[in-house]
Amino acid sequence: MSEAYDIIKAHYAASDRGDLAGMLEAFADDIAWTEMAGFPYAGTYVGTDEIKAGVFARLNADWEGFRADAAELIDGTDGTVVAIGHYSGTYRATGKAMKVRFVHVWRVKDGAVTGFEQFCDTHNVREAMS
Image (tube, rainbow, N blue to C red; front, top):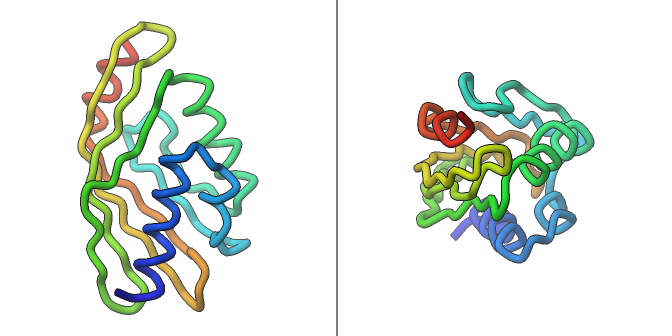
């Protein structure tokens, strides 16, 4: 497996442990993190501070037991890694649980994560929120 694959595998392992510092460890200073249109936290966040505040802090505040479980990692070319898995958690405001499939496309260059793009069924996420 490639270095990029190992870096992304380590990211998900840190996520499983609840280790935010470990999740961010290989992020480039100018990483671009894109949550897809329709997702509650849609937009592109640049840099770890924006990602922590705009994505991870909000997920932690809004969802009980939120998880991103990658069931499969695909080692692509030129530092691209694709993760296929599912999100799960219970929206605190409604008490509704969800389990939603996702695809994450990661870009790694020179040992640093430079990009992330999310694809998921945003309708099912929003249903848990309403």
